Length: 54
Image 1 (spheres, helix red, strand yellow):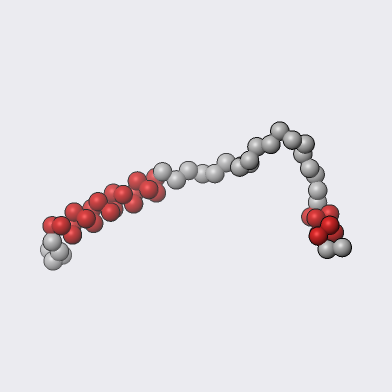
Image 2: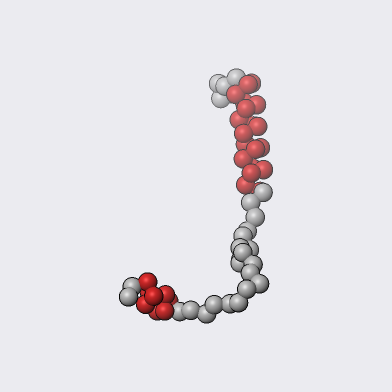
């Protein structure tokens, strides 16, 4: 009906199946990405700006 070959039809089906698998395997990222046992640093945006621009 579409005027394509059986080969093209099978390739399209395989690509569609692969695309669905790839999308389903994505997982949401959990923060923090890096977990540290070191001391926590509490700094404000103003303090960062002051130290970067003397």
